[in-house]
Length: 415
Image 1: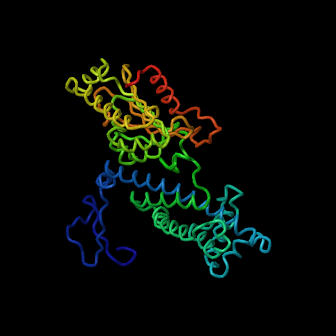
Image 2: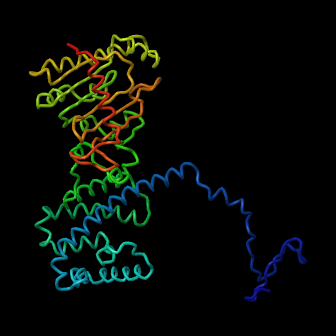
Image 3: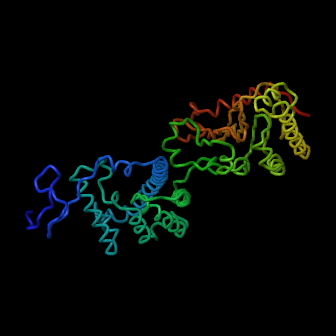
């Protein structure tokens, strides 16, 4: 008889009273399952692990952007409103700025601050203020309430509010550890970059117009020298970094490779002509289609004899036709080399501290379209974007730029 007055069912077979009949009023107790039986149900297969890692990667990227925006907005609010309220209200200036409309959320922030103090969660004395405990929507509310104070510093209120509206979806998803789609992540990154620019914290890197400086790159770029992107093949490169984005606004293009298909076949001759006529300089270095090196490459790839050499020759002829239309042919130089090709490289604005390079190594049985691609950004030191008067030691960009110059000096011009 159980403590509640109900009769328990019989025990196992080794006890007296073994019977298959359950007396009236007895409570049936489920027997414990074998521990091994629940193992397969708890296991994650490869697809499940891939899914959670993808979610974590997206959430991590979004969190970095949200963190940057929140810190920047907090600094802007403090710079504008503190001189207005602090002389009268002292340390309670944030409470005073929130006013009657914000009493509920600002008092909640005060309470969280006190709890954090007692439990030792305030690791940096600089965070021991109410402003550090306001969320992004609350910082926005302060800005909206006091817009006349911010108007001299921010051109468009609508731009700020639209960007913050777009970020609110991402903020809610990340704070609750829910799935974040790639489309929403991309929207959040664009909105964050736009908002940081509006708030006066945009990137001052000229190449950011061509290849935006990513928040993750700026924070952990020192782990990868000046490599800012890696793609498994050229198709994926062009999907995320079209030829127009790479070459469209270039003032200098230096290219070295076998056939230079990335430039010749994906960027129109008319656009190249326009670049050269507007003051740009173009230097193209092809593998000599009549050399023994190109015959060895054909054997490596297992293609018909003469197939690769004809393709390279066609590319050279096309570039010659483009060059012939220039009033100043010196702005568009074409040369060939006879050495064994080791890599293909496209250096855009490579003579400056802020160039972009696309580099592929030649693999024995892999065509150029299928080879891995590295994207390099010049002007990085220790992972941080540097200015013109700072060193660019430690990167790969200078290595490929020097190799191009050596190859160019040893090559011969195409008439």
